Length: 91
Image (tube, rainbow, N blue to C red; front, side):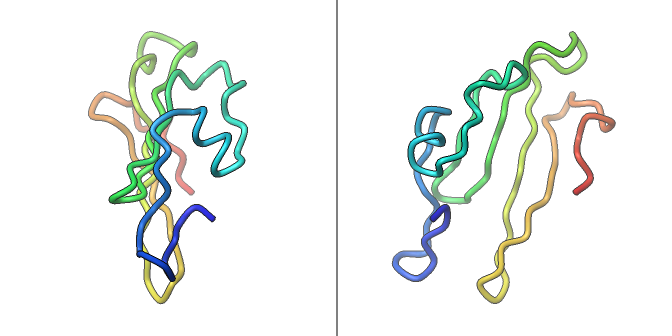
């Protein structure tokens, strides 16, 4: 479970790809386009640092930010300040 609402209203602590693979059981470690990835336990924000695409986006971040309403999680995509908009997923 990625979000532990019933017990303590927190997100899982996954500071690296290794923990994401082990705890969340999502295998993102083999992607050649993700340099680092983490989950912030206090907010649930997932941040991925991009690599291997081109100089306009290498080193920039894609960010998934959760919002919770009535125990339902909705996700919003964004990017770091210099991430070109065309690289940010809409949904």
